[in-house]
Amino acid sequence: MSTTTIKSSLVPSRSQNSSSSMIRQLTYADVPKAASALLDAFKEDPLSNYLVSHVKDASRRKSCELALFEAYLRQHITKGVVFGQGETPSSFETVSIWATPTSAKQGLESFSHLMESGYDKVWNLFGIDGRDKIFQQLMPSLHDTYDRITGTDKRFKGKEVYTLVYVGSTAAARGKGNLRKLFDFMFNNYIDCNGGALTYLESSSPVNIPIYERFGFHLVDRIVLGNKSGIEGKDCAVMHVMIRGIKGNDWTVENSRL
Image (cartoon, rainbow, N blue to C red; front, side, top):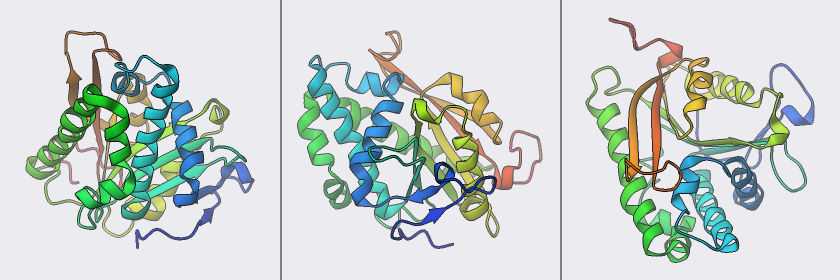
């Protein structure tokens, strides 16, 4: 299936036809609303808090976080896929950002694309400490860990991968099953099509691990950013790397076929 960004596609979930169950592929015009939703969804997230823990002014901290979310969104709208669920006049209930098997070849992480996406604004807003956290810790660690796991582990090497970069839900999404609708949509329309692909994610919240396990993900590694002996969310952040096998196959079982 083509992963080229299209003009605002609306896809109803299989179980409901109400507007709240719609999954819409987002465009640049949706970036402010989507960033606002992610800001709300990740306000208590350890990684998000760690990245701005050095910023004392609340207004500037909000500006920093919004700039980073906006950059992630723009980066993936043209080189990946971004979806919104439960749209309201000012926000979304759930926003998800995905990298596809062709994103890297399309220049997802090229310097020119990063600048076009707004990472220059992130650089200017975050200051010296923030630049170190994002550009010297976060990005290289995530990139290197992904390459090591998918490029050298024989269970995953040579297989196509979809990466869930971000998924965040506001309080308005509680009890509506948005995550299940999202995964059903992605598995049925992208990830499990044809021969299938691996699904890769990093979660900064350990309470989400059992939730992802329900969808066939299994823990494969951990990434620690910052001072490992410090306070999580202030001095450090821990990322839990999880992978779902091809078409949900359990790769942890000996001799399993991915």
